[in-house]
Length: 299
Image 1 (cartoon, rainbow, N blue to C red):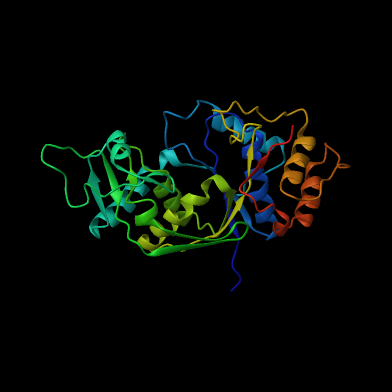
Image 2 (cartoon, rainbow, N blue to C red):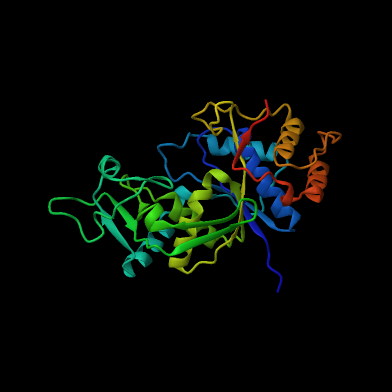
């Protein structure tokens, strides 16, 4: 039986769609459609303190104006708490997570640097010290080698206990961690292929580990280069990335194609976006996407 490709674009609604997010949207959309698959949109709005009111709608309207139609209703992670709690209960029942009382400062003061910040030393793994209250839930790691065969970035192997430590699955502020939510939602939506920015590359082995613990299938991963500014900073709200210009949609889309190593379609009719996408899908070649993790955004 032929596998049905199911891909997704999962932006954080912290502001309007900018070029960095557009690259991930275009790459995931083209790869899904080139495989005759389904393309979904999921809002990573778990952390409501970072979510900008109205930003999700702005992103969706921008995708619509670009002619990028999603195939199923948009999922909002802020409405999925019950599913994440159910996954936590599975891990708790199997004694794979434990409560942690350590603050970020305490961890930073006693830890060495790892793959993604300080490596947690496992202070609370054997139980909370007297007088300490739990702040977060952490999943137990070991030194089993977790391997990712990324379509673009190649083979990545991490030993989580040594390079990351036991990592958080539910935060001190009560929010579920991105790693857990992404894994649960990808499984629930039947995602077979994840095409996204390489800023998430080092997170992927943690997600694969959680997939293994929860009995989920691991998708195929392809991590696109991340667009950075002249200072080498990822384009984001924090680095004042400009929203895409809705008056120059074809130029913006062609810039994204060029960034991803694809042929541009400069003679397209801006009033016929469907024709642009038909030609872009026919020409899509993942093998031509640049292999580096970052590259400068166009001026």
